[in-house]
Structure formats: C-alpha cells, structure tokens
Image (cartoon, rainbow, N blue to C red):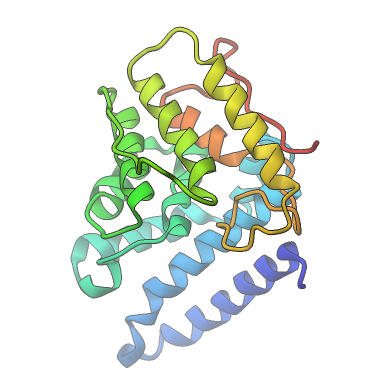
Amino acid sequence: MIDPVQLHLETIERVRASLATLASEPAKRAYIPINYRSYLRAASGYCVRVSGEVESYAAELARFEPINVLEALLDFIEGQEFPSLFASCSADDVDVVAIPLLLGRSDLAKRYLEGFLLKCSTHRVWASYVEGLSALTRGVNFTPKLPPKPSGLEKHWVLYVQLMSALAGGEADMSSITDAIELSFRRCNGDKRLVNTTHIDPNGTHPVPWDLRLAYVLAAAGLGPNNSSKPTPLRGAA
C-alpha cells in the first residue's frame, strides 16, 4: 500500500498541473473547484503526517498557500456557478475547516461552514458535527443529534461532537471526554481494520502522529495552542 505522505504530495503536484491546464479551457471550468477540494485535502493530510503539533502543522501548511485556494473555492461556492458540485459533502470536506481555523482565519472558517458545510447533504454524524463547529465559532450552545447506536468509526467521531457540546455549554471539567478521545485515538491508530478513514484520521496501517481533529475543534472554540487554560492537543503515538 502506498505511503500516504507520498500519495498526498503526488495529488498536490497533479492538481497543480491540472489547474494550469484548466485555466485555458473554459469548457472544463467545473473541474477547477473539484481540483481545489482535492488540493486542500491533500495539503492538510500531508502536513498532519510530517508535523508533530499545531505550530509545525501551520508552518508546513503555509508553504502550500491553502488560504488562497480556499478563498478561490469559496468564490465558486458563493457564486453558485456549479451548485450541483456542492450539494453534498464528505467527511474529508468537513476536515478542510482545520486549515483556516489553525492558520488564524476564523472568518474563512465561518464562510466555509455557513456557505457550504451547513447547506450540503452529508452523513448523519457529520451533519451534527458541522452544527457543533458552527455553534463554537458563533459562541452559542449546541445540543447534538447523534445516532443511538454508532458503529465503526462513528464511535470515534461522536466523541468530538460530545466535546463540542461541552465546550459550547461552558462545562468546567471535560476530562472524561478528552480522556475518552485520547483512548479512542490511540486504539484507532493501532487498528489495521480501519480503511474508510479521512485524510487526518488515525488507522493502524498508516498511523498519524497527533490529533489534528481535536486541535481544530479547540480552535473553533477559541482555544489556541498558546492558551495555557485549554486542554492540551493529544498525541497519537502509543
């Protein structure tokens, strides 16, 4: 199986080459936002695997100029030029919000959430997940609507939704939730049965070195890496 670091780099280079060609082919304009989405996922996926925490992730990510790409993507979304392309979204699309949140562009994170993620059709867990992220960026309470019996990776993802609800509600002690997230992350990072993961999720075949998902959820709540009062982003290595 191909190394995900190499795969992400190859995707970045392929997208760059494709965008250079598409710029001169108006008939294929719809492929431009598709390539933007692929580029953002690949850049974030690469950077989480070659970094060790938020600061090094952000520094590495800045080399790929993702803010420019995200702004260009938002122009397509908000201009409603190809609405069918944005009628649905995947977990990978949701996780792109890590980019503006951890590069200090909460304004773009809100545009991405409100202009795309909150409007698109998505998986049952991710609909509630997106609502939670939006609540954190707006500073309002959030009551999640989660499946009664989550299965597979849903069991891991719902923990972050529960954390969002606790953060939005201003709970003083979230140690039970963060402990559960740490345990789940470590378990997933050692589980080779996991195959349908996102570009930032842990799995046993290609473990990730740290929990970017936790970091960007905290950032959505205004808890940055230099805020000593926040829970510390969890490391994934067992």
